[in-house]
Length: 79
Image (cartoon, rainbow, N blue to C red):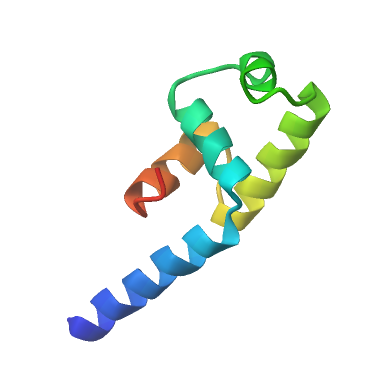
């Protein structure tokens, strides 16, 4: 049991370290149900940057969509 818990903690830490502060902020915005356009305005970045960052976050988390990314981030206490 302890080995499983240790592995899970390592994974959480690895995921957290893999994400930049801006990517975590993007996840927080996604968790609030904001659209890409709203995230763009909120973070003062272009819509294309939001789309690119979203793809990067999905890849890092192994997520298939926004809801999955938020679920993974919450489960790993990233947001």
